[in-house]
Image (cartoon, rainbow over all chains, first blue to last red; front, side, top):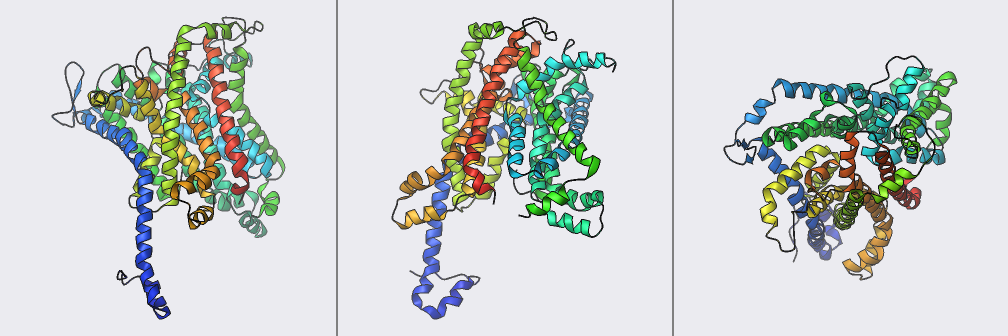
Length: 310
Length: 285
């Protein structure tokens, strides 16, 4: 049976002259569309259910925990919901850790940007064969074991490690930076640098170089052409890369655990401490919620600035 | 693509050209030098780490006779196999549902599917810890499920983050494929299942395998989430090694690290090769 087309459905009006049978089509099409939509939903359903149980509900529990009550024995009970844990966020200890996390992750992001931009530029201006090889060269550390890659620096920075010996040999003074914030930043840069290179490469590779040529033809210097054309066009990559480095650095746990001393813990370390040692679920959860909020805000900034996918 | 233009305008001139080259070489050295040093010193015949004292395989011998390491490798393998299998099925279905259909709630699902990728490890770990401690009593109602030894918890949480990685890889593959082959199959009265089995699946297979290898790598390498959900005595290799690493540098730790890194890199390279070999023509649009 023919379903009346909504007023906005232009094709129906256009086809009216072609006969009655054509008028039926939108209804049938819509039915077919609806059937297809249902199939798509059913296909996605098992995953939706899985992620609901093992991701959304856990997320809900962490949010609920941040408002929950801690009993004397260190258990967290989901009753008498309150804001105590959030009030604790202003404590000196937590503020110190939060500021340290913030500046360390900002410094890490800036160093990564400075190191990665020229490399990404270099890769994207190679011939396709060389480019692919170099990309694989970046992706291998990107995906391979983060823990062990961080540990490799511990071997180098150890009191009789190669870097320490080299520092002393060339007279740069005391090379012992292990267990300092410098070692943590070094580890973070090393760990997350590929996260910066890849989105930068994707953005620079897409640039239409005839624009640069146009700028040069109009007597722009090489530097001016870069600053006015290449840099603005690569900005989505800069923002994506910065986000992908900043967010994990901000919540880092493994790197400070291996390269930092007791005093260089970041927010990630603090959360772990609250759950595994101090047994303070509400405060640990509240800090987790803050880290999550930072992640969501950075993601929103990324999408706002024209990013499409990660 | 105007690659002919690129050469002349994109390449800086004079000194800055060599600076750019030198910088790129230095960054690659930065990527690989620590790994190479670690490998070299894992063969060092000395307890001190800094001084080269001759070649030995002793540390690798120690590694394979260590009971704890053997049992944790076994845990890792079990968790990795089960979580990868489940994640591949769910991730591929999600990729198809998002890439080939339009349905209500799709956008929200798409957004949620990205979260496990960008969420910091520690947050994910805390979520799993809290979830399992609150719901353990519910799960125990399900026959055949035993959350006590931690194996199921590890599998469940690894699946939760691996679905997303698999679906990203499979979607990349699907986006490069023309849907017309599938339409032709259904025009020729193939059922949905037949179309999937005979047309779609063979075409997306490189993506599925690439995604599976990625899931294997991520599952084997995961430390933070695993250390929060594994039970005493049932820790996977990565968690066990993390405990060793924190205590300091020893030759045994070096050899374990090299083995883990080698396994991880082998899977990464295989994954990259498979998704590249099949996708390179269509990627260079």
